[in-house]
Length: 106
Image 1 (cartoon, one colour):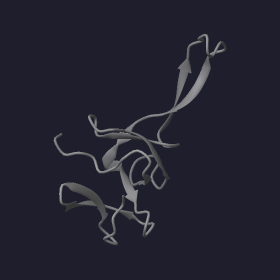
Image 2 (cartoon, helix red, strand yellow):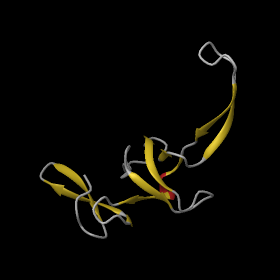
Image 3 (cartoon, one colour):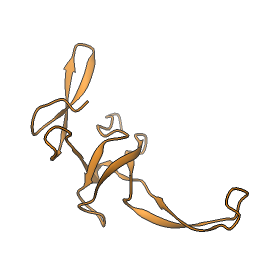
Image 4 (cartoon, one colour):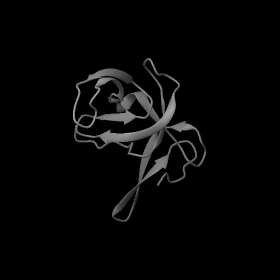
């Protein structure tokens, strides 16, 4: 897994496959070593929480599970469409580029 992920924390993405297909939300966490992302309100699972000092009653909570980065597509902030991400090298720095409109993403 030498290639780095082109989706980062805070990016607006849409889910293109799986049970949450069509959902649009924001990336809460990127896990590049596992090639996964945690997307807000996508892949929600129920988890039994043991009573602790912070949460004395315990109970069942909802958490977002990581999904593979290939199941999400970045939404370009300029053209507002789902797009693939390219890289443009400017001197020593790389910038992400929208493949549809050609504008810089960040």
